[in-house]
Length: 99
Image (cartoon, rainbow, N blue to C red; front, side):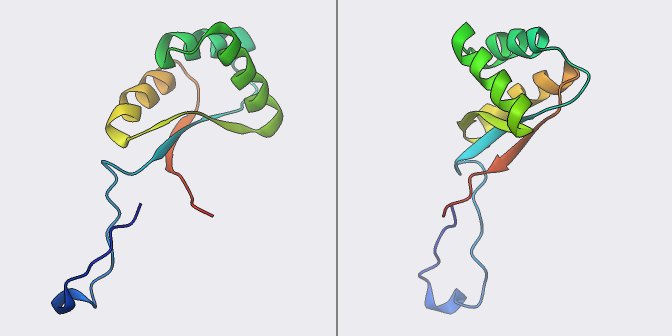
């Protein structure tokens, strides 16, 4: 979320996104390497998903190409993203785009 700047002396400065508190998504990407079982196991262990949540996420990842498996602040999601990528699964953190 962008912070507004109400200080008149700084009106020409751009607003700065605060990534520490901004709402972020942990995105897991589909690939042709990892099995459903491995992705499901990873989501259960890393993201604390239930079996049902992990299975649903794996299907959405497979059919949509990517899926936001978790949301939160950057500092919470970064270790999860690292743990997922260390297991050979592609994952990124993206800021939630407001419509």
